[in-house]
Length: 235
Image 1 (cartoon, rainbow, N blue to C red):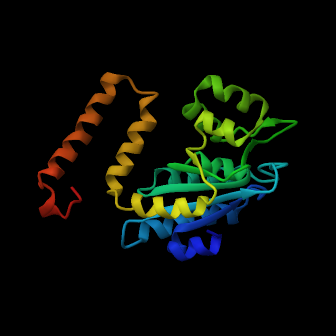
Image 2: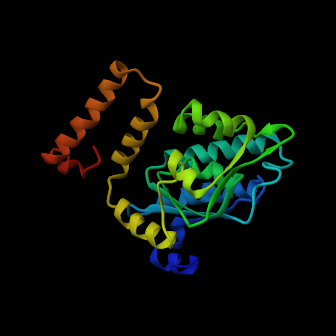
């Protein structure tokens, strides 16, 4: 399935492309925020599909940019990460620079054969944005250490083994379209709650987390009994 085929299978409003070699700039920030706007304003529950691609590692990420744009980029990524919609990314070629940042905010990650993930490094070292925080939270300190301190290029197999990619497919766009349709059936609020429980699990004590998990369980049980029916299912 080509990019045009993917657009036909899904609403164009739910699709975004990120080129690994693209420098950080206000337009890139605007593209991510615009995707969030479209998904938040959608009249029906939907999923985002983001195509990450590149022909080589980002040579100078993030480029010549001010801290104000960096701050806006990190806020846009956080908004994307926490959005009440499923985020599926496909990775073709080299995932580097801005594509790595977006990859780490996704709920499901599909790699094409031969894809690679390149954490770029220059004389100043690896860029110290919030990707460092996400890599450490998602991989643990042992696996993140080398990537964060020295940069690295991960093969398809290594990315899978580390958990940065969930699956590979010869036609990642077709798989993404199918998953998007399935994930769109999930309740957006409940999806967001479960995502947050996962994010907090590594940094929250069991006793502290128990109350939030019990509240989520209670919501599910009450919904099963139909107690939210009168409120339109949004309680």
